[in-house]
Image (tube, rainbow, N blue to C red; front, side):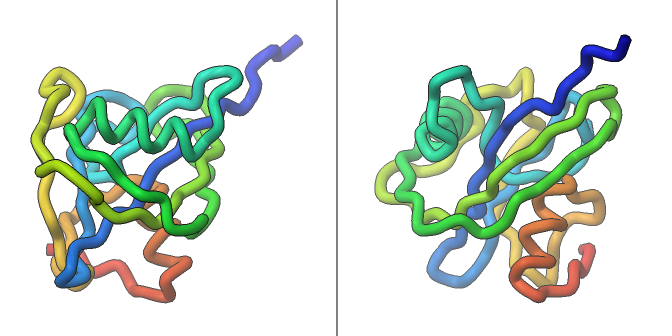
Length: 139
């Protein structure tokens, strides 16, 4: 009997005043090496929006405001043999300046124009771009 079940994560699409998207480079599976949205695994009993705020504060040292749900991403076995369901929220920074507080998990971070994105993107980024109706253009 297969007891594997989907797991829940979440992320936030954070844009700056110029419309650039904040991405972090993943060092761990799933999708190691790809650039993705900040966020993480939802703990039991924790609301997804609260997880997004907590994870992003832990990863980047910033406080965000959730604006609205942008899309639901689904990542199935992208290197870790797991199945993830993740709400993606649009958000904005309300305080702090991004910095890589988890260098063991992330290779770096950056602001990217939607027409100059990194070549390798995570599934949630692709889902977010699709929800925007934006074609993904790799740099």
